[in-house]
Amino acid sequence: MQKEALSFNNLVKKNTPPQAWLPSDAKTRFDDDDISGIRGYLPGHATLIEIIASRIYYVLNGCFYAEVEENFIIMALRPIGYGCRMAFFMSSVIFCFLTLTCTTNPIKQYNFSRERNPEGVLENDGSDPFEWFVYLTYLSWVISIFSSVLTYLIGRIGSKNPYRGQFCAGFPFMFCNRTSIDDENGSNFCWMIALVVWFVGLAACASIFVFTAISHTFVKRNIYFSWVLVVLLSLMAFGTLADALSLGGPTGIYVQNRAASWLASLRIVVISPIQVILTVFFLILCAPA
Image (cartoon, rainbow, N blue to C red; front, side, top):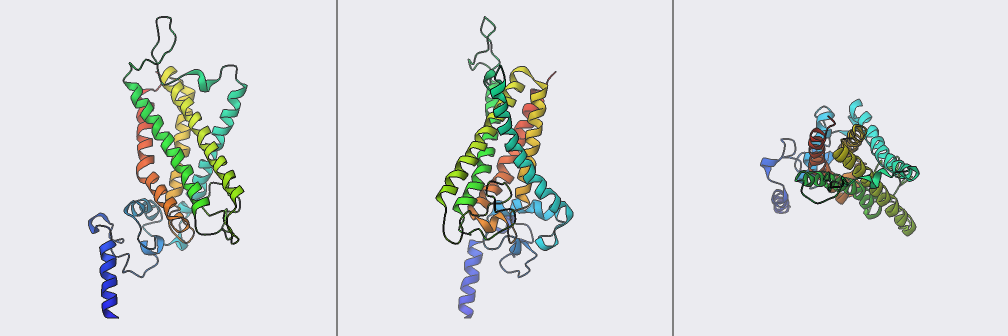
């Protein structure tokens, strides 16, 4: 038994991420039996990016991981964040429908180009080097939007944990968690098709809304669309924060689906910061005079 224990400890140490990269309470997460630490919040072999993302929860909860003793900041920011995410996508859908009633459709009015031909008509000849930055900013938004939607599709369709009446999971079109739509009797193909159409449609509408806001801000320096972009960025940031506060614990994304947890952590640590930085620089450079 002693030899088996030693071999298991060696295996654990072998699969442990480099110690220098880990915070002090994460270095002993395989040996510490205290469930209030990171081992209880992210059980098993959590990846480095998930550990980094979980530190937001750790800091805002008073440097404490125990979900049973969450402070009021966590309990308030989580529903606010998911509400902001729902508002972001629903406002995009409403905007796309409202443009159908406009005489001049704002979606098709401008591209990412400010060059004009001799007749004064806007054209895209690629001579403005700043256009590449605009395209890069918009690409960061598209990646952020579709990666966010993908976490829900992976959780709802690809999760192995069946739906057992978890809080706010009975209506799978909501943006609260990633609980599987599969019940104890198996999967539901019709639900899967409906969810794919729903989430992909929302992502498409959101991408169109952001495209319109960026193009009007870039070409015409429209102050109203500039503020729209600020609001959209704020809603997106609060939604990402809600994911950061919902990674671990008994009902967290980490337990529901590991792939969704890793992708959500990637959004928290890499994708969303890049999106915020590029958008802020874009707004500064294209701010109305």
